[in-house]
Image (tube, rainbow, N blue to C red; front, top):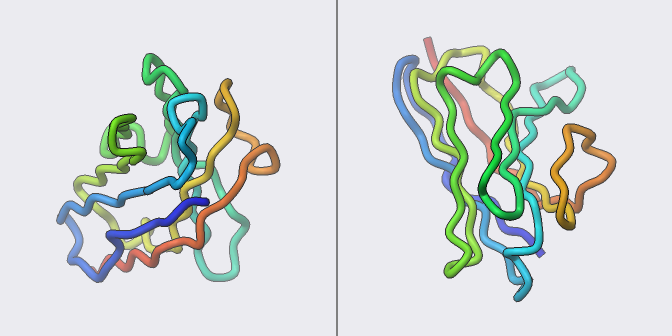
Length: 120
């Protein structure tokens, strides 16, 4: 089970850090993906971090602004979002996938999501 948190309302240019806490005791065996869904749009890939935290991958729209990290001792992953833009406004979801990461949302188990709103 995953619990997303850390969303909120911020101004453009601000930073925000989302957390994804897992109850799974084998958290270190799971890759963590972050996805987002804006109103009226499809859910889209944001980034992932592999189960060994060696590799990360990001969508082009965020790769120079967002980073992902994880603390396996705390069963928690983080999405650090910098220089936020109004177009980043969406519900953000963390998701877990056993072992190898993927950009395909269909391969993940999902958290409940947290709202991020960026005002101009």
